[in-house]
Structures are given as structure tokens and as C-alpha cells.
Length: 138
Image 1 (tube, helix red, strand yellow):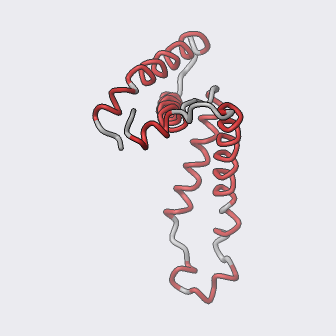
Image 2 (image 1 turned 180 degrees about the vertical axis):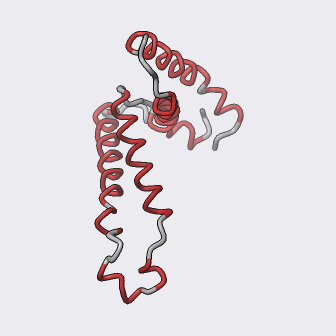
């Protein structure tokens, strides 16, 4: 699926996203501190979204929101859960993990928005990047 040829075919997408990130920093962040982690996360996310869905999500705010949700989900998944060791206590939710799983619903909401936007963009035309990748046409 992701052969060298397929990855090479996305060279211009990667190049465009890197240039967009540099332009964003140059136009809006001159003289201000730049959170390189957020910037790189957004850039990589845009490249992957471009490869899979044939489009990207503009705005650093979206990337920061998505990164925060991913961090919360990772924290929840890494936390030991007493209910795993004592299933009879699960209904008590002693650690509040079930209540904290709201982050998972946020991820679903983010993906639902992206999918809805992609469906509106598609309008029955070419299926976009991910279909070409899955078929191997890059």
C-alpha cells in the first residue's frame, strides 16, 4: 500500500505543506515564540490527511485541538485502571476513567466533521488520495 513509489508520488504534497508551515510562521509569528511541536504536528497531520483524504484542514487551531485530544486519549490509555484488576468494581468508576472518556467522543466528533467536509467536497467526483493509495495507483 505505501510503497516507495506511492510515497514518492506525494512529494509535492509534502513540499507544499512544509512551505505552508514556513509561510505561516513567517507571516504570523515573526518576533513571537513558536511552538514547534504544535507546528510540526499540524504539518504532519496535514500531510497524512492529504494522502488519505485528498485534503487538509486549515488552521493551527484545529491541529492544537486535535493534538490535545490525542494527548488526553494517550494519558487515559496509559493510566492503570483498578477495574481491569477487579472487574466487580467497574460500576463504581473509582478513578473517574469512564467519565474522562469524553476525549474519545471528541475524537469521534473531529473525524465526523472531517468526513462530512470530505463528502461535501467529493460530490461524486474522483475519490481522492486514499482511494488511489489503497488501489496502489498513488
